[in-house]
Length: 271
Image (cartoon, rainbow, N blue to C red; front, side):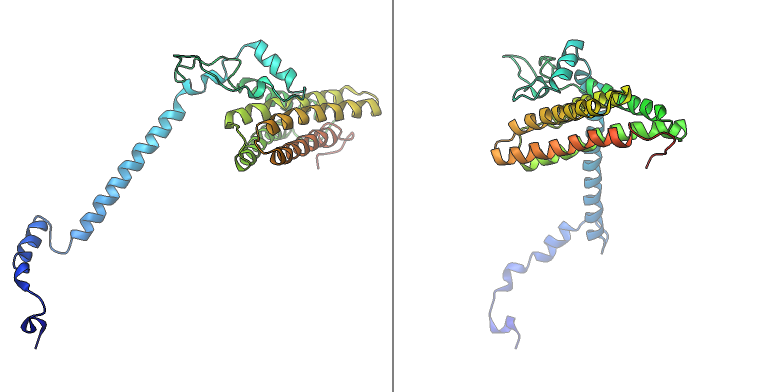
């Protein structure tokens, strides 16, 4: 005896089910409903991804988005260069962007002195590469000109971008109130110390005075950047860790430059 004969359920409500199924599947070939649903979902996902990708490309391809970061007055650049060697808790290098009442951020109405600029850091990266090239040529390093230029540019720009990325990751981990562009600008202006150190090294001063000046420039540049990042970190202990890491990386890099790239013995090649 089956369930229908035992009376366990009333099947009268299922009389119209075949008609409902036929209406829902009308227009679809037999056995292809799941294939068409999968195709439709894939098409929708593709269109959504394509629209998002086009929006990202349009945003980053718009030159007006980066124009404010290169439209900077010479006095602002000189001021930031000077403060990159002056350790203090407040500095124009990381000034907050403030907009007046009724002003629009999209219109770029923020003060030029408050915006982090990339013109100064970019020029400092090229300057450091040029100084390294000059120092290597003065020491008569036996490498082709193309290799010297490429090595100098690679070292300068890779240090700037990699340290900026490292400091941004550390700042994000420690909850520091730092924007990526601020970190990129500050780390770029910190190259002013290594530029001066390489220049002093190439000047041929006496040994003790030379390394004293180089160490002082490296320490001032590293302390200035580390103190700025420490102030932007809410927790004091985390701020000290942040500043110590920045100081160690930048101070060591400056000394390494002078030892291995600006103080190469005569007729020696690069390590």
